[in-house]
Image (cartoon, rainbow, N blue to C red; front, side, top):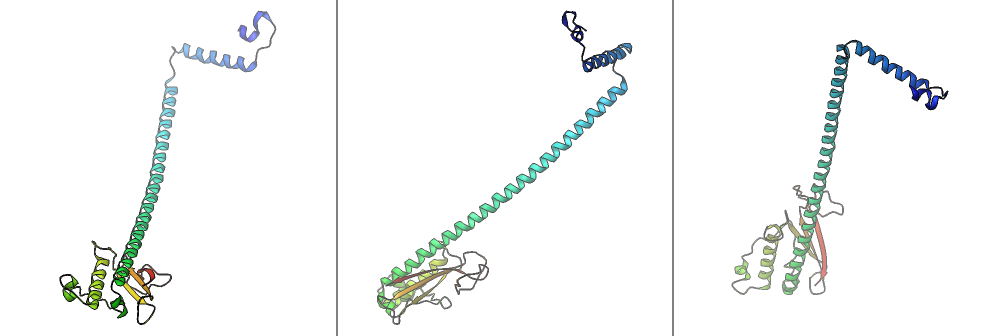
Amino acid sequence: MDCLLGAGGGSRTPDPRITNALLYQLSYAGRFSERGGSIPAASRRDNAHRAGTAALRTRGFSLIEAMIAVVVLSIGLLGIAGIQILSLRANLGSYGRSQATLAAYDIIDRMRANLPAVAEERYLLDPDSLPRDPNVGGGCRSAACTSAEMAQTDMAHWLDSLNDHAGYDLPSGTARIVCSATPCSAGSIITVSVIWDEARRGATDKSCPGQPDPARHLSCFHTSVML
């Protein structure tokens, strides 16, 4: 008790809060020593009940955390899947436009190599009436053929390559070719429109409007050059 009264026999007044705490501890220890030093059974049951309740609360709290984590993870995975789908569509669209560009300049080069047939408008094309006879004049491979036969062979082979997986691989690929003058000749403006189903939704409209509806209109790539 010297710590309460002060060292050296001084007259320091003890702190009442410390005194009360020490007295309570001494009284509690005295009661247990009178009963053989064991904690009462009721107290043990109360302590066990409180411990079990705390454990249940802990397990329930962990389950809620796990469920929230699963929901957050699922939302994140759905977002990643959406981004991947958008990226795939963008890549397919870019690939289609690149192939359409190559196809347009392919037929333009064929036309420049056969200007007599261009003057006869053999290369002009309406997508609703397409030539499909590449064997005219033996296909212009094994024997000499006229400029008109060469033009017909060029058009048939070129149109077949638009849809062919070994060619330009454009779904529902077709084309329109128009000339700015009649008759079409060197110095005229040729406009080539490559048309295909970029959205792959089964669209059939070949009108190429300024603001197409992917569900109805086919995609169009236009290029104009002077022969």
